[in-house]
Image 1 (cartoon, rainbow, N blue to C red):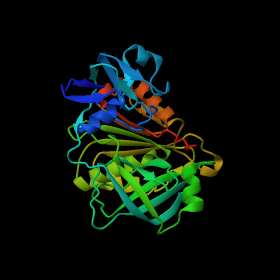
Image 2: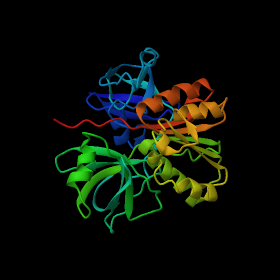
Image 3: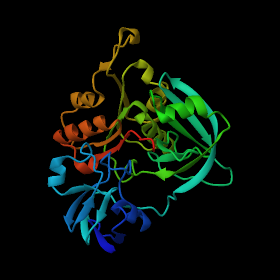
Length: 339
C-alpha cells in the first residue's frame, strides 16, 4: 500500500509504500535525506514524526534514545509508513547532479600508513566518470556477497582513482580481505557515492572539524576540496587518536595551514605512552573542543568517527549552544558479517 509523505519545513512530498523505508522512498523520488549507515545505527537520518504512523524496526537505542522516541523522532532509514505521514527534517537536497553507480575498479596500492591503517587506492574505468561530494562514501562489494562502507579520502577534483583509509582490527572481515586475500591489480566492484555528510556550501560560519581514527578520511577530502576551490573559512581541526602512530599522513595539516587561511590544527591523544614522547593535548578529542570554546552558537561542527564519540559530541556541543542544524556527522558503525 502506498502513502503520502510530506517533509517539513520544505513542503516537498513523495509517495512511499509500506514495505520500503522512508529514506529509500525519498531516494526513489529523487530527494536526498541525510543518512549515514542505512541500518538504524548512526542517527544521521533522524526525523520528527509530526502526523501519522510509522513502523519502526531495528532502531539502535544508541542512535535514538528513549527521550528521542518520546519526542516523536524516528530513524528514517528503517522506518516504514503505516499511514500518510508528515515528517520534520532539517536537510533535504536534490540528487540530480550526483548519480549512484555500481562500478568496477582495480586495486593499484595497498599501503600501510599506520600499524592499524592501510591506504587503498582504486583505479576507475577510464571511460566512465565518477562524481561525488567531499565527505561521501562508497560500499565495496566483495565476491562472497559481503559489503563494507568506506569514506572517500581524496577530493572530488582528483579523478581517475579513489582513495580509502581502512582500519585494521582483530577478527575484522575487512582486515582479512586487505591483508590476506586481496592484492594489487585485483578487481573490486563498488557502489557509490553514498551518504549526505558534506560541507554546507551556503554557510560562511567558522568550522570545527573533529576526526577520530579513520574518521580522518572524509575530513581530509573536505579540506583538500576547500583548498582546491580557494574557500576561505575559519577552520579548527581536532584530530583524535589513541597514540602518536594514529596521526598518519602527518604532513597534511602543515599543507592545509599554508593553503587555507584561518586553518588551525589540534591533535589529541587519548592513550599517550612514554614512547610517544608527546607534549601536546591529551584526553577525549571532543573534550578538547569543549576546553577551547565556551560558546558554540556561531559555529558549524563536522564530526566523523566512532559512534560513541559522535554521540558525545552531539550532546555536549548542544549544551554549549550549538544549533542542531549546525551539527554534521558521520558515525562509523561496525559492520556485521552475513551468516
